[in-house]
Length: 185
Picture (cartoon, rainbow, N blue to C red):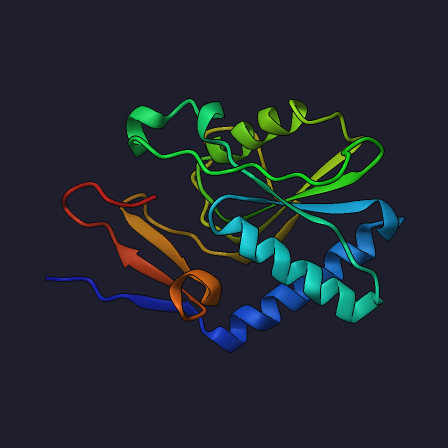
């Protein structure tokens, strides 16, 4: 029996979730002038920009956004396959900044561990927070988001797929059964 794809967040629900996450970040930040967002490639980058736009709407403050590629920091390339590295772009100094790492889905925690290692190569910010759109559980490392859009208990064989307008031509989040060839994460 084939499993059906389940819509977790519609485009409108995704927009509202990002608004809520931006509000939570603003509420926790003591000084928005010291806040920066670092999107983890690939889908964390457009999410970071969306959060920055929403923070600007809420507070009339422009929050700098950077992009972090973690390919060379991963310890699980044998599991996820060969990837072509993308560009890390951090056009600001991290010293004295509160860094918010932004990613689409947190699963085992290995991506975030790699991102933390990568950030240390670019500076030593006094605080690093984590904002994720979806937390699907199954952590292997003691890493937990500070800001979570949606907690979604999943089976390990399922996949959470985030669609973003900038990359996919539409917004939304779906729960997809794992394909037999081992695809998914």
